[in-house]
Image (cartoon, rainbow, N blue to C red):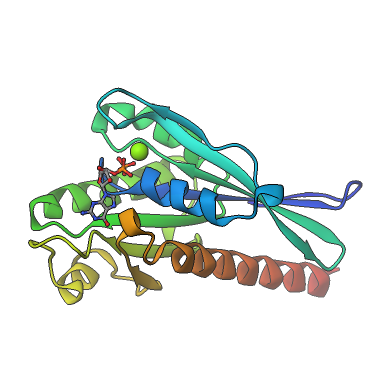
Length: 202
Ligand SMILES: Nc1nc2c(ncn2[C@@H]2O[C@H](COP(=O)(O)OP(=O)(O)O)[C@@H](O)[C@H]2O)c(=O)[nH]1
Ligand SMILES: [Mg+2]
């Protein structure tokens, strides 16, 4: 959950980009990083192998300005998609506030999307949490591909809880900002709801 540091007035939120290998998670973070004004973002740390795949994860922090008396900072992460990096995925997911599932629209990656989503659910459950209670956005990426599956089909296959979804071509930047705006909106709504519940209990 989001960490509130009352003394310093800092609220820190963690967003994780999940999905199969090569679906466009690193590309999302690169575009997003460039979109934030330089004085609001920290360095983008990319740990890539020579095959362009993510070895561990990518990360950057950004300041969102203030909400009430709190300065909000968001840490954006990606996970490595390949099956053998599950320990890294679990570590990155710890304390996540919002998840963007970057699905590859290529028909050739249909199974890879399903496997990655099942892996996400298993890792969330292993951490003692429920996926249904974590804010989530689906991104249908690579809409430019000639073998892109119909969005209708992807919604039915992957988005059974009807989370918000965004069509994207991350390599051109299309949909990248909208995706993060939607996940941040959901995370903030959940935080507000928790704050209200806390106030009601007090
Ligand atoms: N055609 C197409 N290629 C994309 C798109 N987004 C990312 N890519 C490419 O897909 C490859 C894998 O992207 P990357 O961000 O490294 O995937 P990751 O493994 O999920 O981090 C790279 O060559 C990207 O340029 C897209 O929307 N359309
Ligand atoms: Mg990557």
